[in-house]
Length: 416
Ligand code: HGY
Ligand code: MN
Ligand code: MN
Image (tube, rainbow, N blue to C red; front, side, top):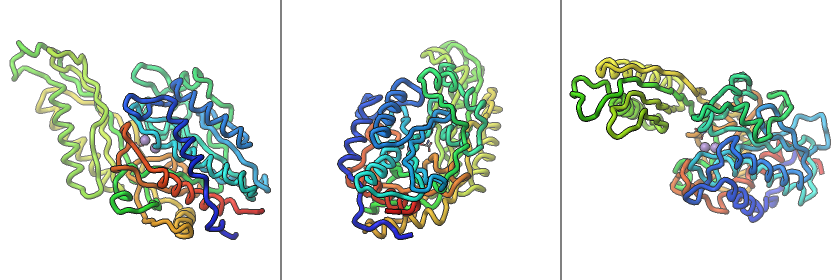
């Protein structure tokens, strides 16, 4: 099939305006967004996306995990659709572009096809995956994980946030529990445009990241139990300090990750201290260890070393620790054919590009299990993400969406 002509480009101003309008929903406190999954703000953002999809002539389907599928018909209704999308939910102190660029970039692909009156043989489906972030309801990429058969739907429905609210109940409450069975849809391919969330592309002055792999991840939730007692009158040798256990485990995670440079990473970002009183020794700490590596053997070795290290720490401090794995996916190799479509598109359009491994997890990492999948990345300012100061340029967004357009449309096969 002929590739789209190199003169075919999306409308960068329209994409940017849509990004800015979506950013007004669920504002943060420092210029970013707090549009966490299944909150009222998420529901509002979904309704805006729905209105835009309907205005573009798309037919909307919603599955039982709330994932939204907006379909543009192809000339061959039996041909497997090409899916394109990402997520609209954000971190509590998230940016305006993480996930959103991929969903609205997919919508811009369709809007541009409509402008140009181009038909494709395969239908195209723009997708908003529910709960990619996993910050309110762990794990991350929950809905795409159910779609890919990694998680059971009922298990996902029972996931609880810190206030004890159930995922399934919150999905019903915001009115976005659809009727479609999850995973019933079959795809010719899936493409996801995403900001890099790291510094490589910007540091090297490169427009496009051709994502060949995604690194693996493990989230270990640790419940550390000591004994609450008075911070003034309890002699040091008699303390069972869960807070000290947290400090040593935090150092352990960092040291283990540093042993596998330059690729491995490790940190503890989620910490809950009980009773969190200035003059009570912490009796309990719940925290989540986030470790990642592009190498499965390294990830498993880090996991093993951290568990062994925790055992030694709690014994020395006369405290206990329970470890629950609340998130995991192995390193991902994306589909060569789809990756080539991304690379050829960047080349055709004259954008500088390089292969890159995704440091962050994405819905594409799960969908890669059930359909040929690839990602397009664009730079972000200072490589910063999961921070309200996350920022990109309109030019970067436009270049990423141009490449997405060409990869998607070439795969969907232009007919007229
Ligand atoms: O955690 C991640 O990598 C993604 O942002 N959910
Ligand atoms: Mn994301
Ligand atoms: Mn994210």
